[in-house]
Image (cartoon, rainbow, N blue to C red):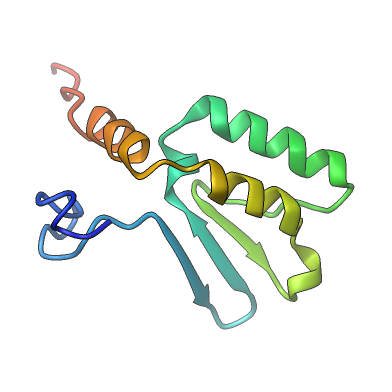
Length: 105
C-alpha cells in the first residue's frame, strides 16, 4: 500500500510502504505472504475452510503460505481472497490491529 494512500507506512519500518501481498523464495520452499489474513480472523477462518475443501495441504504460518511448487497451491482460493481484499478495509484492519494498547504491567 503506497505512502500516498497510507502515509504512516509499515510500523516495523515506516519508510517502507505497508505490505499487503508478497511472494518470496526461501532456501527450501517459496512463500506467499497475505498480511490481510493475519489481521482478520474471520477472513482467515473462511480462507482455511475454503483451502481445506480443495483437499490440498495448507502449510501456513501467521501470514505466509509455504509451498514447493505452484501445483501445491489452491489457486482458486488465493484468487478469491486477493479479489476480496479492499485496500481501504485492509488499512482499517491494520490500523485497528496496530493501535491496540499494550497490556498494563
